[in-house]
Length: 113
Length: 112
Image (cartoon, rainbow over all chains, first blue to last red):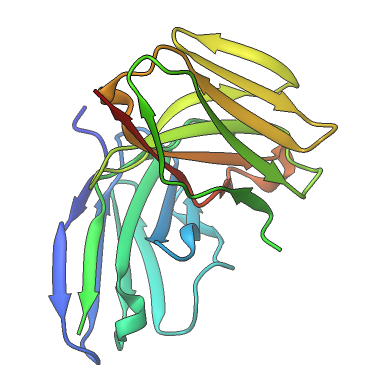
């Protein structure tokens, strides 16, 4: 298997623009997680899905952030409008079953100018 | 206070040294504990996974959990330059779904 796939790998945008990050989980995994990593705050869970249904979105910072999982093989994280403080590395991870190992993608490095 | 505290380092050691990485936590509900390794510009990858107090060994790596003190450790024996990475502790509990709480990570450099 190719592992978790994320795109784009790098994104540079200007404040106020919409940003869409994409994730393809490992085939057969039923959990999908979106994380944000910064030097100051470390790795923070934003939201996670089970069988395409959002289970816990308490980590989503504010209404500017939204996530969807239209099917088992695709998820998006959208930021609209983007702000400089959103600059971070965003990781997607997937796992199988309760307590299953989370496998991380390579991340998307986002820079908002 | 964060639920999980981890010294960010950086920690620099000579090749062959024994490395000790540590995390403390405040939530007594945590039941399982993990160590992830993250190379520069890569995603984290699972290194060790343990449920119970005590030690778990895997090659040069030993994970230690002391639930009474809310303290976990990762020991690396005979450290190699290829061990240079950031090590993140993570923990969760059965009632929390698959949600993990991560430490901020300790940056380790093993020098020749």
